[in-house]
Length: 157
Image 1: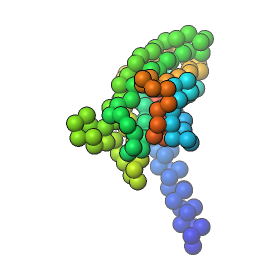
Image 2: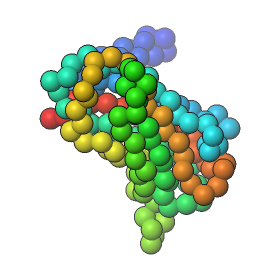
Image 3: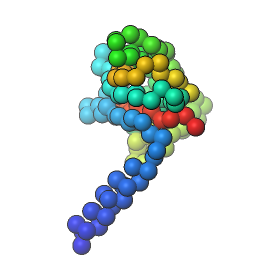
């Protein structure tokens, strides 16, 4: 009975995850030791085949409630298939309310997820493979209580 229930749940998850027609790419880098070192970027490779669409690029950060700061500065670098840098920026991701300290994302069991779009209605100029590198850009080398960093591309609506 348990096996049948598990198979049903897995099947439903796969079915519903396949229903998002706007999703182009989704990836995640886990930090098993619960910290993100300055020189350990999250690197994602993805392909763009259709240039007629505009895209939204989003970042997802998962931390614990013991994360010591209210925000996270990230620096991202986007390179096209020729290795040319096509976009870069420094972004401030608010993780906790600055006055109350309450997490601004969704949470369960002491883990909190915050998703923020960092490029909206972005037009890629070339087909092919792209590389996105995300560095933590805080003032300390080892950022404790960061569990993962994720990246998602969706077609803009």
